[in-house]
Length: 255
Image 1 (cartoon, rainbow, N blue to C red):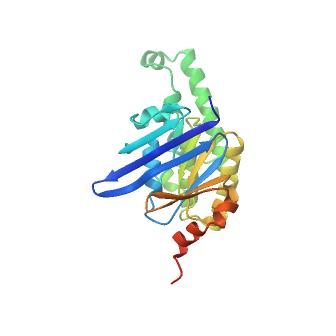
Image 2 (cartoon, one colour):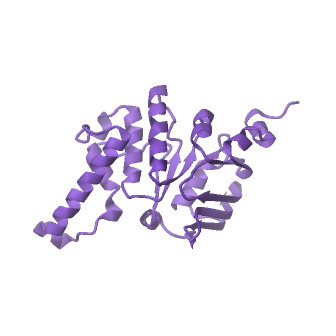
């Protein structure tokens, strides 16, 4: 197996007469933080929806760890090791922090109905494993000691952290983050930068969609840039920062 975790080839998505993503070629290597940036409406979230299985491509291919996953539903991609968060936070507000993260463990549960009824040793061991994993994730995102609180009682920044913890609960090898810094206070944003770095250092490959360029330049190893659904540039933060096509896409051409 190569060190490529995710690769798209001519990935295209049409909505009626609108082409939201146009022949996107992108490659993400194991262990890197790869940013996907572009102006509003450039196709970034559509791309994440294609990768996670919410949308199916009109044309082109998506390969995850050398396996073509074009037609796989969301749950099978999750089982393979693709986790994600959303632009608009999606939590179970009336569940606790602990139970929200437990939901993300569903692909790792192996005990059956009989074992659950009989409270077998296998069930007890699985419950203890889940507890240790969840408390570890709470510590990672700064929620340890608040795992008993309801999700709807958390401040906005902590709700963002909780969604990331839930996405990590299934031990993904690729984590898709859709604008995780949106609405964050400067203090929470600085904390999230450290958390994402910690997640990456632990071996999880990350695809980050984000508008905050300071954050993108600080976190990313490589960057792909979309404009009107077309990839107009790709490279290191330094290369992207000085790319004339990127500058024009964000700032416009001089008259």
